[in-house]
Amino acid sequence: MFKGKVLLFSLLLVFATSAFAGDVDNCRSDWGVSCPTMRVCICPQGDFEFIRDGCKTGTDYIWVDVNDVSGGGISGVPWSDYWLQACDPAQELCLCANPVVADSLTNSAGRTTISGRIAGGGCIVTGGLYLAVQGKVIVTYPACTAVTCRIIIIVSVDLTADCKVNLSDLVVFGLSYNKNLGEPGYDTCCDYNDDDKCNLSDFAFMGEHYLHECF
Ligand SMILES: [Ca+2]
Ligand SMILES: [Ca+2]
Image (cartoon, rainbow, N blue to C red; front, top):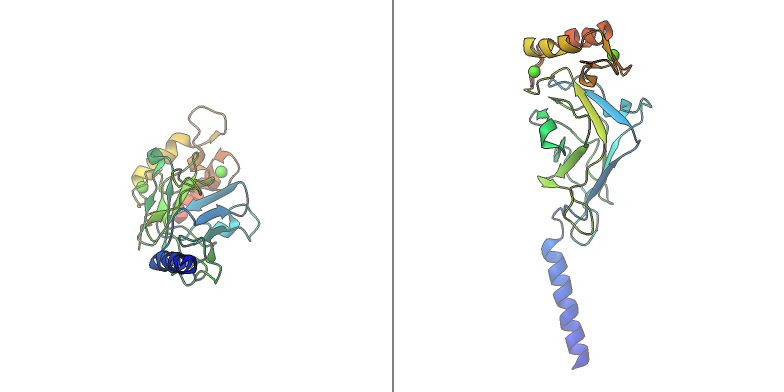
């Protein structure tokens, strides 16, 4: 009798687990950044800075562990099933249809990395980013209530965050032109070579990406 109950309980457990196996669990999944001060320049055309250069090493990356409800890794998650956005809605990016692409399918442990470029516009200075897998925003285990925000600074030649680089962006850029960090009117979103100055070097990037938009 006792043995029978244990067996039934075990069967129920197996059933409960297998019913959800393979589905992404946004609380048991996790993500992070390989270095503490990542800063990436983006363009809607997806042709600006690589995430791998975000901390200037050439080997920087975002990692993602895609897990199911039991904490097991899900392998084979497609390259394009990821989405990044600002944790602070006031700094929302404009993102193209496939803004980021993973470096590979998730491996047998459910892990992949993202080290390519981001296709979009806008600027995130504070508050960090969240990451979604298959439309599910990753939240912090075990409470599953707080969004898992990681600090990544995003700057873009699309300063108005409408996924187009045009005259309205030049107007915003002009307001910060020839200003340095600490001076009134200086906007760090206009600094594309990471020297805390908004000057001709940055304007050159503006020219290089002028009239770019999402493919
Ligand atoms: Ca724009
Ligand atoms: Ca600069």
